[in-house]
Length: 348
Image 1: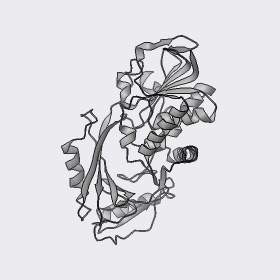
Image 2 (image 1 turned 180 degrees about the horizontal axis):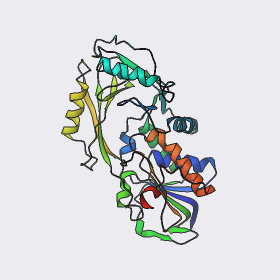
Image 3 (image 1 turned 90 degrees about the horizontal axis):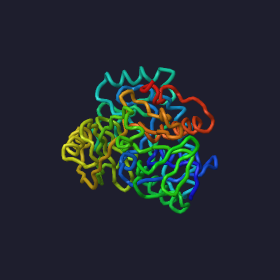
Image 4 (image 1 turned 45 degrees about the vertical axis):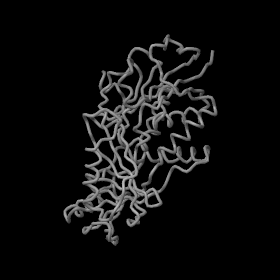
């Protein structure tokens, strides 16, 4: 019988961050993943410390970035890949009033290190931005597809990945250990994203799930090397390729791209991009979202060796390493979780 410290179910951003914490502490683990969840793969991957719709501070953004960026640097070195790209993000202003709100926000202590007080004027004839831009600091893009694809290959070479569905009915639980087929483990961590809805141990947590769609375009004349946030994001990938996203659909729970989603993105994009382009890809995924916009982390009410790591929403790149640390410290060191992310806020 194979013995490990942990079984981890899922292999998205949350799972990878938790696996990195296990590796750093010499804990053995086995990951189950059947490629059923697409939200991490189709994520735009931007990280920035400001909510650009309202010019407000992202919850615990400094703590998140301080933990996340070294984790991704370690992965880059270990796997010999490039995934973290420093990227300038410019917020397009729609009016003088928005400019004023930006400068007011930049005076706030929580935001002054993230928001530039210099107005960036538009000089690109293919971008409509008569009121200019505001620049956000400490921003970048994580190539989530490269990360996940290469990390799964890495786990495979270590014998730490089973590319198959986790069958909940095969899990036998007692107070001291768990068995699953011929595997014995001390703990199971479920990091399944929206797939947790089918999990009999945690399907009662209030995970909503929000569908997001993104398109990839080729625009040879655009020539921007920075991301623009307007009614949608446009993010440069190089070689005249850009990602445009994202939509928010609270009713459709499928991973299938839709014409409605594509048309919404195109309509919004054409309000500020004034050059020809062609669509080269269109993908969709279900974000694991929560009504109070906080992750869902914690231990099962009855089975104290079952844990959930979920609810990262649209900011998984920043949040994943932070909550992975929190969960690891709960399990290994009996440290209490941040009350804002503990599932007890809904169950107790």
